[in-house]
Length: 434
Figure 1 (spheres, rainbow, N blue to C red):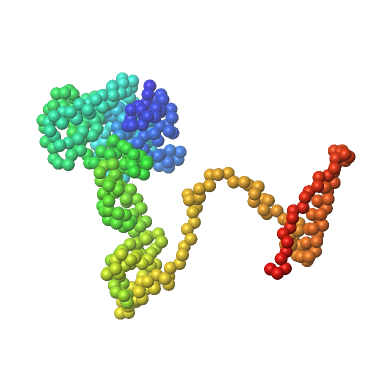
Figure 2: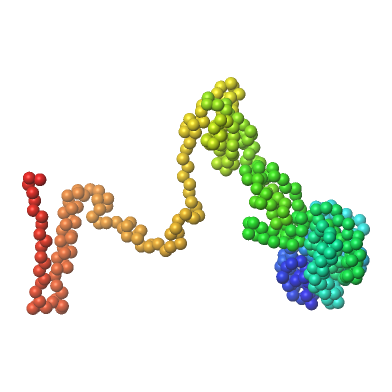
């Protein structure tokens, strides 16, 4: 009996069979869900005597809710349960149990008054009806889009979700304007023969439900782990010195990327040591205004008002000194001289060696060993020896080696064979007059 992981969301993980103790792979089943919560207190004994009766149950995509275990069922992560719904009942998968449920309920401001209940562990019939309903969702979505297009409604059907018992179907749609879907509900009810529920969602929620790959090459944050959507504005891009390009800053949803907020706090901490970007410096050659800020190198680029094409970079501490000098009523030196005084060349170190073309080639390891061998005739080895003595010693050694080479081997020597005579090369005549 399948536990429903394969049809719970978009995960292709199957936990195997379901038993009274829950899923067979309890340790991995809960982590296969999208937007799952890791139970880091699962191996810790509960110090309190009263354990919570609430569990977190998840449904299709990112929809979760808290239910009360009134019958004290042995529930674990991955258990398929039948829960209370209106009308009928719904089927979901337990995604979290234990003390972390209290933390999640407190985080989401969930009230414990009149909670929904868990009826039972899902039996074979419940799971079969659930699978049949889930199998019809794609065809129902295509047909629902055709009906809305025929009625000329400015809306887009994003997703369709059937209830566990098939008594209700929920249509998620996006629209920029208000939609009058009274006629649409009538068409849906007569076509699908079930209760219709319409829910409007935002474009960020649409991207979370559909999923996709971002410009970074990874799966979208909103469809994997991001649960809350914070407002993102263009000021986050300005603080990070990014160009205000809508095509670069927009995500799959058409809105500003949520990742613009990730490093914003670090940039704000770094910019707290910088003067304002609207700072002007009064120099001998005229006023200069700030054009660009480099947060990592802690430098600021300035340009004259009448010559804005020439930029001069200064250190942040130097800029502060110039501002203090202007407050005293003194004019600063020209930017050309300030730059030459404080311009310190920095050598860049390529740690990854991206510019090294032969970084993947196998180098000769013995080449370095031969170069580092100590030569017996080297003056470094014997500092007390004179150069003349060393030269004499080296010449005698070379002479002995040459004599050994010239001596023929007794076994291979031929008495009739005469040694070869080598002709001497004619030496050029020396011109005394030159």
